[in-house]
Image (cartoon, rainbow, N blue to C red; front, side):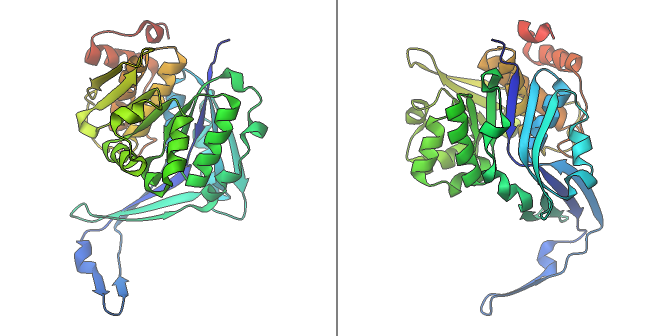
Length: 332
């Protein structure tokens, strides 16, 4: 049976990026003894972007148009009025299955950057906190048609619920705990990893996973098929084992972008490339290389969902960087 679908789980959020033409240090008053804090920030610019891990991944999957995408999540009353629904459903291959909570707002991240590139970040979960109530059995009627699901960063409760449900539905899992890794209890984190096929995170997050679980890399790879470590400008690393339990480690370079504007969402683009490659039955290594290519397009614009590319541009850049095009990709 052709497993032509992927399931994307994670956050859908609005990102508000603001600029402050001063140093935060000069705008903050702190009295540690009285535990008093005062700060007045007057932003000189503000941009609204569509964001969230699930939204960013799905957007790139939409541009690639290789696989059918089912995007699930919980959103608020502003999801439609602020344009997110129209934005993400512009792609024919994306099916949106969000629960709308009219009494809540869609998750939002407010980021202020000062002249020293210091950041002040406020995140409001809003409707995102309702994801733990989603029953995948009610949403997914054909689990046998899904090649993979990515269980990306949101609350521990939601990620754990999704791992259990996906495991029972026999849909292979890419586990992506991200910044909530420290919030996982040790045994729960190990249990989620055991239920998954692939673990992905940046260097800091994978180190946190090892510290939290008490497992080193060799012990970790024994309970999962593959580990992908993203390393920013240093590329990424794929660690996997064969049928005889022999462990292999391969470094994957970045794909140089035409211009570097904003790295926000590059990792989510990388994940979209992996999902697309695996759906095409490409090797995991080639899928990671495709991820590197997609990430390179993301950094060429501001925001995680403003880049544009098509499959021909992807193939051209893949050949330029790696010297070949996987046959499964060539046929697209």
